[in-house]
Length: 263
Image (cartoon, rainbow, N blue to C red; front, side):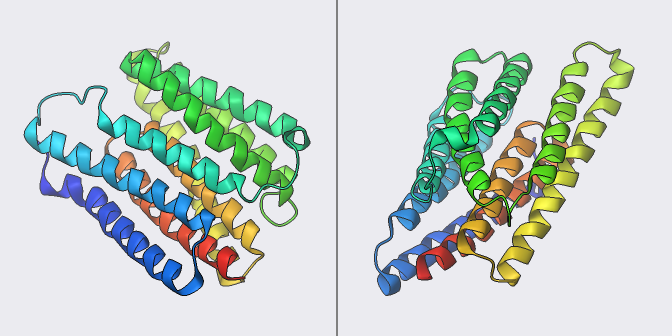
């Protein structure tokens, strides 16, 4: 049975989601309708609905594992809406970022393999990987277009190396003795936290310095993507930290998109 403290990250998420949706409505009244903001509103609604379903199921069936259910559909809508939001800002062809896209596909395939190994739920994990992968493809394309001010080639190379190390650390837990599993998990959590902290700082600084709007959007959506990966790869305290970071990343993404629409 969960304690009330276990629901704090989800409650924070609900509050932020409601704030964003109300603010998006007010922004639409003042600034006019924007396709970017409408698509982002669908993403926020997907996050909110997924959380509401999880809480309802957990309260009604606290001892049972959640099956393939409506929350998965809400998450797919979340990923597709985020991808569509980014698609409205892309200007170059898909070939311009072919290497980055290739790595994103491989990284997502590795994540899907880990999810299946952990849960055994092939169908939902594969579909989630496809729609999440579409989001990542559009994200790396925008990062490529804004690389001089967002994530430069050396920074992306370091993050890519961290991605490989994180996947390796998680995969190793299936092969090492049980006494070493916790060490590999901790190593993955540390690497995930380092990138999470770096992206969080970069997003806040870009908003503070009033960087070019597409730069702010690419960085803030990168934080969203990494927070989701962090959540899917963690448990316990680290899962709660990633959950709170995800909520904050959506808030920062809203601020970034609002600047993009107003300028």
